Image (cartoon, rainbow, N blue to C red; front, side, top):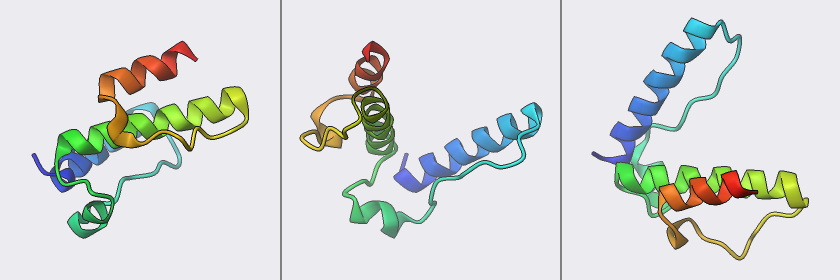
Amino acid sequence: MTATERAKQINAETTIRAQAEGWTFWGTLVEDAFHWAEYGITTGEELDQYLAWEDYVDTYKDVHNIKPRWTGWRDHTPEEWTQMARSL
């Protein structure tokens, strides 16, 4: 699966959930392959890894009031990033 295909899948799932739960506003991921290629992301697995890392960074900042700029999205698997975020 490409990053664009995965982004489309995530967006569709988010839209379904938002409509079911009555959300007024929600964001969607960019579905342009060129955009993701600029980040070095070409596959759906890499996109999942990147998004899990972003979640970790946001959670870390919420807890410690500083972004962990010494990390990179390729440093861990999506599962490891998720576990690290939960352990904060």
